[in-house]
Image (cartoon, rainbow, N blue to C red):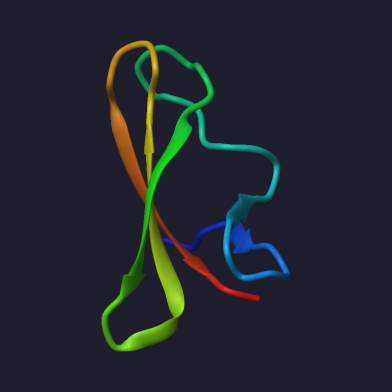
Length: 65
């Protein structure tokens, strides 16, 4: 599964292309909750998103640019 996310030029904050993912339960935009590096992949981070309304979470892997 490919991700359409990329990091900003500063490398600090992930920036999803086309906006944040939408919740599959209530169709609201999800907020970024956590960013953590992927072990043994120095140019990839895991980004966890959460829905403010229902609490659903989603995780996306993003490559730093």
